[in-house]
Image (cartoon, rainbow, N blue to C red; front, side):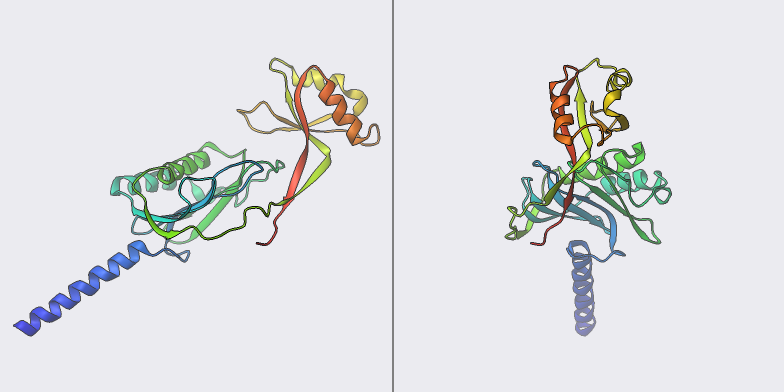
Length: 247
């Protein structure tokens, strides 16, 4: 009887250890991840971090820069939170979205969302222009990341944040912010001598537009200066692209 109890105790202990290991494992492979969010860098002080939630509902937060949680943190999220996330992702028709939403704006962070639907893990990424279901998935994960009661698992690693991405101007593309009330179509007509064309509005909620112009009609410096003198334009700057540098 004592031998039986001993074996039973060992079995229970191993099972408990196994469950704990599954819940608190930090480095996950794709089959172990249920939800994930990675927020990249911008030219300012955007939070840079990654969040993963495994199949058992254990969340891991790795803060890299511009966040109050620098290092690796973990916590078990509630069943209600897990079910709410599952409902949001499952109803989003996740598989129908492209893996990448294109953007021509360098000065915005890339947000990458991951989801394992029970069969395969898939990621989608983008910046400003994305459908509402994608934004809702991002916001639901950001809410978890910004919540409290995180436990520090590993202190922040020494990362050289002084190595910023190399920034290159795209001289035939300009980001403008018109004065509120400016009719953008009418303004573009008034800039006909420069061959101005509207490429896109950067985001529905932002009064920012990406334009291009005829580089044979005016030099890039003269065009930018003309925009800065324009009483209808609040601000103007060349669009930019970045290239990653190694640490």
